[in-house]
Length: 344
Image (cartoon, rainbow, N blue to C red; front, side, top):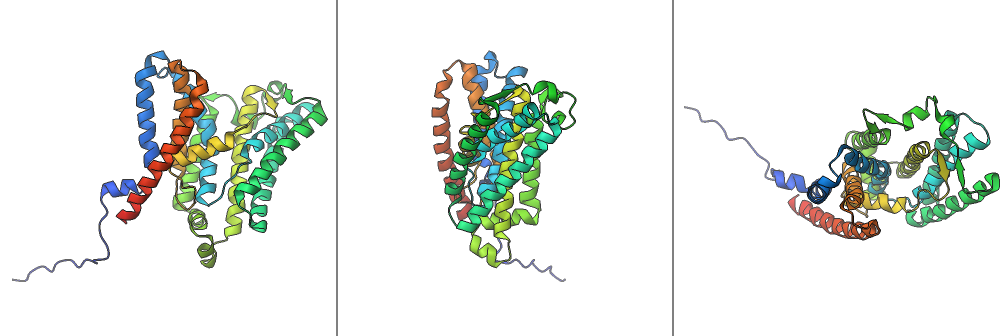
């Protein structure tokens, strides 16, 4: 009687347990953190409005606005770069729309398209300067932060004589493009749908496309990626354009919701987006992270910000919580990354 041969297995291949698989996911810490934050504020502020329909919409909207930025920033940071100019880009894009419509009488759709074209130019300049000079993106985009902010204030005062431009609501009514950036759908602000759509798109790019592989390779080891045929410089430019476009989406949503533009808008948003991205598991050194993690990082941010409000605690303490969350996130992410590396 013939005996069945045992299947041949390669001793170099070993099964990875489900725990190790979970530990290898960069967003694990943010998912767990979001669950804990939600549970905490549900207990201490659930009967004060945190769990009401209006309360849920409030922290989802705050999360969505930051999440739109954080998703784009996560791709850039996975690619090994930083963009500190997105806060100034928010103010600049808002003013491009407002001045074009209110002062020069452009239709809203044309002003919005001009703002996105301007964002593409700013993103290209950031990426080009980083590639051309070899300077750290932190320095290049920090310079652009001041240039954009100063130019926005200067040109706005020169053209309008003030730093705020109101009166956008009448021009937005009935505009086909403004419709995509204003109002609600099924009771939820459109910003939430933009947030979810961008998260899905960014996740698909990272996990299912060649360009996603290029992003990870560029952030992990630029020289090795270049030797393997990855167009590192082009990838960087596209990623910088992506963050500038995300900032313009944020600005357009904000301008149409408020009906006005202000040169002070967008302050510190670049740091909030980076914090949400780091909380989401993206390494500061590049080459590792996920858009889903950035989304959960933004969700934690929104729940904490609005949760503090619903508990009745002075919101001045929010930045204390933000700093503590950043420190904890970095420590947790380092631990998870170490465990994932050991498990391989």
